[in-house]
Image 1 (spheres, rainbow, N blue to C red):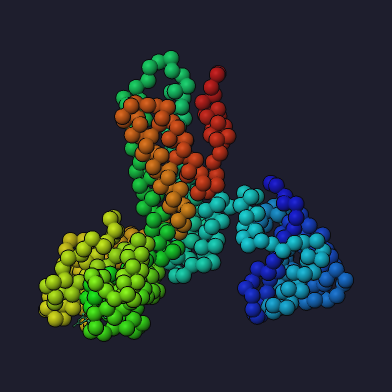
Image 2: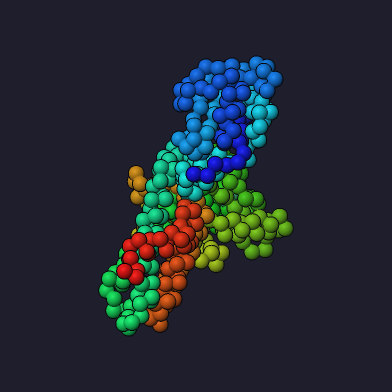
Length: 446
Ligand SMILES: Nc1nc2c(ncn2[C@@H]2O[C@H](COP(=O)(O)OP(=O)(O)OP(=O)(O)O)[C@@H](O)[C@H]2O)c(=O)[nH]1
Ligand SMILES: [Mg+2]
């Protein structure tokens, strides 16, 4: 364990007034500062009632002091917590006193960073702390807690294990080329590659859902003017936030509403109707609508079912977007509400009466991967998704190199890069680790 040279201090509770406020210190000087501010060191891990004083011995407050000697603390360093009366002035007096005694103000996230540096948490777990604190729904909080307790890191480590075994296999074969090796006829290798590919797929899917749990699911509503986009936004959110009129071109700006579908945080985005020859303001609205489309997790293409001209989806929707065609105003056509195609890619509904809205909610849950969440869900971030897809891309490139040119060296190199990218998620693996593993497992030279 490395002990940081300086001792940091910060208020751990939110700014403002409350019954109790907590000032936290961490670092090698925490013990000395505790003696200074409290008169003597409290018994480790016992709540001890004390008077809190500054360097001149002036009484600042009194309350409960908690002392955690290193390494059995959140940061792995000596930690002192002062639970005082929760007012901003009291808190800043306590922080100032700790600084007089030699602490310095902590940077954002520095306590958690030290916990990471001291091996108390890996990177994904450290991030999960912030996600747990910031979670917007109970489901997101539960998922963040699972990440914090290591569910995500564990899954990443399991995949990394597979890559390590593969690398050992391939690199050992390359290092001992006495016999000509035909990788493509190596059944064990091929089945390991297959397992690895499946493991990548599964983890990428889980992480994508985890990202949605953390960041929410962005649903962009587009379509021709007057199709009923704003009416649908209002119906789904249960509020009259968007202006609805029979005038085509009513919405000219991008409107956002947060809704919660059974714990799934959804950001609904209403946009200006897409049409040719708009006026200047509307043209800007249409430009913004197109921009919103590029960041959509799902797109709702609204059509007026009572208008036979409004059928084409146009080329507006980006490739690969998850599109649902919503045929609105079925109260005018008498059509059946609900899914009108396999997999509910087309849904009949009425934003006016609400018929068919439940089918749309169901569809959005399914698109978000929310259906098969189960108890195993964990949160993930864009950083993790990016690292995962880079790792997967290297893995796939390695497999392709093997297929096309039987190039074991290229496979080995891509596997190394895949492993490295995975390691970024938890901040875990270095090439030294791998060398250690190879020597320990293979006893080369014996
Ligand atoms: N009968 C019926 N009328 C609807 C329904 N949905 C919307 N309308 C009407 O259609 C008209 C247009 O609705 P809006 O929600 O403003 O349509 P929009 O797509 O947002 O239109 P723009 O903002 O101009 O692009 C309004 O007069 C609504 O009352 C529906 O389900 N049934
Ligand atoms: Mg509108």
